[in-house]
Image (tube, rainbow, N blue to C red; front, side):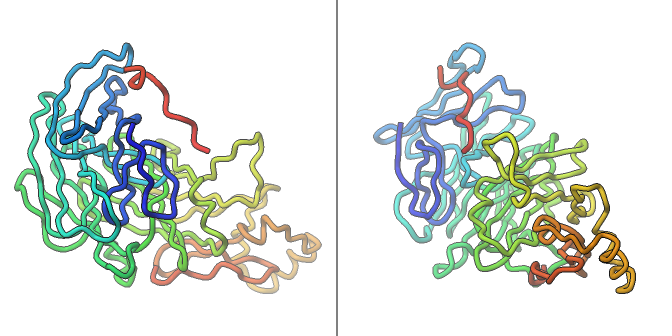
Length: 357
């Protein structure tokens, strides 16, 4: 098992291999990547001058296919919490990332696009520093993260590569409703819709606001949803994204080892149809968020009737108001506003992955 530390202030799974530049890197010799049906696991094993790619049946560890590919390759990590990606939902393409050593940006980035059924493959080489981001479920559109700044390695663009036309398309995939949004941050967690159509990635953004990047992989469009959090963002490294309500809601919660998580932990819900933050619910069942729309004298009466009991939970998560960019921000009743609006806004195959801390 290859164990090489990332040249970044993040801790990955032990088998992570540093991928040149600021990307999360690639996986070699670890849990690899499961097929959508969960019956096949794809893993890469590093050799001296080549990489062994294997397809392993998960129920008995039988190696279905294997191939030696010259050079160093791995299953791409898409977040710093160890989530991997690269396999199209229809199973027609598997993308491998090139392993590389050293910091800074690469002059040339290379990927291997593999046919999972035959293990035949083709290489794609691009000028500049690119990392795998996502793949459309029909294996036509490959999305890449292009790092564009040598002074700020967190700055990036999302680019589209047409695998049918075999070319990198001009322009960037960006939120057209927020043209002033600057794409920068580190990917910490991810969730994907059941059909692979939408990919949601949580970004930590020290010095700014954390946000969720919602990518429509079939239409090549994106939306950015800013999260009203002004505290220490290191807690977002423990956050888990999950789809709720048949994919209509994206839930963001901190993974907590105990039976009951503190109420002060950040927690968000996003409407995946409107890309807006949903109002948080109050512990006593009263919809405090509605007071954000009430006249001042109504707020005063409510304060008296409730004896102005504002807990720390209400002070950080209570009333909300929707800003012009279409995201929800906190507008706390009876308390000082603390969240301001973001700017424009074989055994291996059958083994279960380790539990996240």
